[in-house]
Length: 135
Image (tube, rainbow, N blue to C red; front, side, top):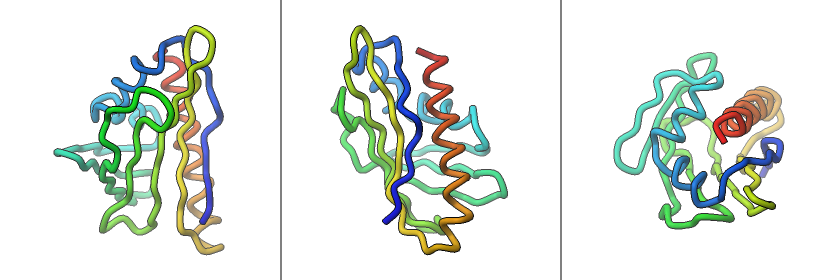
């Protein structure tokens, strides 16, 4: 299993405020839209989007949306996504605000890792920057 994470960024908002924002598909989708993502759609507990190169990603929410700190959002890939991974968003209280980190655990062989890891690092970094500019 390979762990890929964004940089840890400080936000000027309480964990509960940030959690409410990104637990809603609109808030989560707007973070993705800041990066190499197109065609973000959601319905119920699932969302899908395309990343650079036209690869479709389909995710299903596996967390209940009640957490306001710690792991506040967990998503898992579902078919027909070509690479299996779980994505988690972690918020930690820090001073008057909180810190944010997004990451994933992915099942990658060496060849796939070479192709996927830079793209996910870029996507997660872009999400962190977008959230930092929002809060």
